Length: 617
Image (cartoon, rainbow, N blue to C red):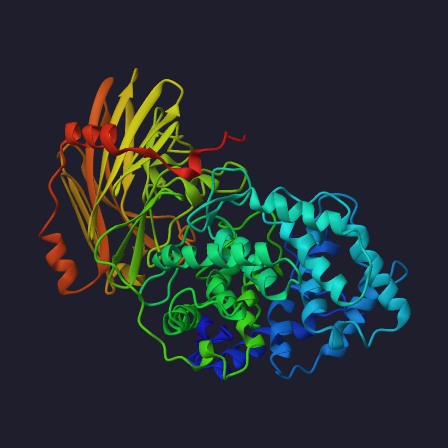
């Protein structure tokens, strides 16, 4: 019998419609971890792959991250049979004399991240994780947390980790220096932009860390803090504004925009909706919040996201180390359990009692100035035209932040061989080569502006080559206009959306002058040269490059770029196969007038918020 990797997904077969379904999902996700707990209970080692931090910190990660779901479960009256295991782990992990000791924090350290979950559990369920401990274990745990919190945390969402530890220490009656808490709360406010949007530090990226970190922790603080009414009110006010925008990062089926780093945390992306419930904040009607939350969990239930033993893999739609970050260990995906925060609420809470409402799907483009995006809803998908963000610090940061377009249904691809220009996926990218072997694509922007629902960027693939790009919605298509000025000849490849490739070459591929179309049983992806200068290619990309499916087809346009100034005009779209897709193929949008675009930005262009900090190398 052939093994179906989807069936190893602990969410598979769960209808995920009720609080009871969510409770079962959490248990099913946790149980595969039990064989991997150390005898002392403090370490969970799931495989031999490494991260940039030491093995003890990785083992702590495997131990602590499930607490993001387990603590709310217990707070809401749910049963969990292994609290004694966790108490043993807390005692032994903080005992310098025990083999399971996690090691001391002596600088910015991954342990700081994981201790936040322990602080959260101490605040939420002290009767289970603190009060039953022997005095020696309490002393060791308190001393460990107090020692760690005195060091500088990373200058981003990490600052909330000290705050969460402090909530736990306060609840358990442990004295500590509260000025450090206040300092970080003030510095976190410095990351706030406007209209509900933050940056994750003073950097040019505004990604899923805003909903599943900045707002997530802020809403926990809003619920659990004592005596900080002004800040609590501000956190809630910001979350209300943010909800109206971030709902457009989710499609009608519950899929979220595949964009940015740390996507291996998977359904943590829906944690914001659960955090609104936890904070009793009806930022949108409860029925809409409930729908966003449950649909997102259901979206994950039919994907091969776990190994055969039921342990969540590093990856997104399937196991994939190519897309991982250097800080992803085998335990990292369990930040996904942050999605179970609303289990702290009883079934009578209006969030759980509400009937799900459908997603709010706007037929018109939705401009988002702060992340530099224009959102378009299409069938079963949300598309983001994007300019203004960058990330050079993370692996594949260029692909994660600097493509022209991202989507929930089609994800994006990461390149796996920088010396194989002819094999690049280049979905959502204009790539150049000056030697036929190596390549350059957009990594950063010198200028990034938005005017209405149109984006403009100026960028340099080399210091002597300048590209200006306009991105224009034409739902379900989008149009890209590129004006390229180069002192030497180049070759260019531009890609559309990547779609799943069938086995046995059971797909229909069209390659022609100025046009390429890839059609599978489920989807159609097309790219058209509105200037007619380039050749079409339906490219079979390297396997395991796309985030959502392991084998893909990418329609591309390819051609030479002469010395001087060249203008390329491209239309691209992807839709589920069917009448709508066939009709869209027959209605390719017309090329826009560049002079009109220039006049629009001269009149209305404003800087994208994401770019308004200095570059960091």
